[in-house]
Length: 463
Image (cartoon, rainbow, N blue to C red):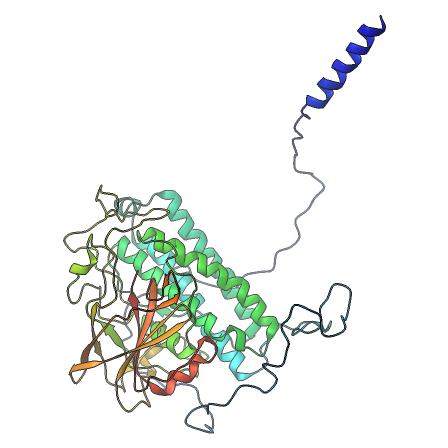
């Protein structure tokens, strides 16, 4: 009797140990009410499109008194190398588990507004970028049918992802408008070069590339650390967008170890040509528009073998023109692994888009061309000549010599350089520009290259 009772007790314990709790099904509580959501900024999903045909009422970038032709190069701050960096604490902690130091960490209530002209102009540039992306994504969906997307390897769910990315841009535009205040730039009208879904995807991955990199270039220089925090949390979303459009484009999604940053004037030079017109009272920008630079033999991701790319295999001859998807030897419907470039999570091409030693041909415009909204900005340069090609990618700035073959044409050879061992620096969707100097600059002070830029930048589809 005792044995059987004990066995029963043990059995009960064993069953209890193995028992799985019944799932709890949660239902919405009727008493929970949604908190009121802040409104988004007014926007039109798809604006009018086409080139500007009117006469500008004002020309030139916003400007005031200029103190010097360039920012002088100075030695490092004397205190920049004094911290011991030995893994120990060297100051009293202002609170438990809070090491001494940092910016904006003293308990001051944050204020999310520009603190300088630099802040306002940088954030306004970012807002111009958000506005065009909102329009671009919606325009692609409105222009091409579901059958067009299916022919390019994309289905209704992919289209819905693009639609959601447009909604993200509405949120980003709202955020920056709220930070900038009543004079924030508003939505404009635009002009795009693509004619097919594949060209649309390629243009999107290029436009989001310079939009993302343009923010990285100024983010850590903002006086308003609070605004920088919010912008960081939106630009990381754009980084995901850029990768998604690379996947839609049949490219390897992230072929680099680091994403590069470029100066505001570089981003504005690439963005402005696609803005047709803005309202007459639109807030203007202070950034420079450099003369346009084009890569004549831009590697074409639509080809099975991009090394066979000929001159002009882009739709339009602009600094960030999309690939021409109608070329022969297209890889979209190939059934061979390593050749197929249909939309996918990832593709690893057997034949790379570019390689060290590749001869790259350029063509550039003279300064003085009217560009941008209402043709009201004018390209300019202070560089005396074009002697070098600057390759800006990942953490690297690399120069190669430019060989001129005409007054506005020349070539160079793609350099063989790595960020670190195992990471070829020339990869992904990157930047090239013509300069008069081969002075060394680093990611934090790259904007000091601007006085030496003769033309560009252009995007280079290295991988």
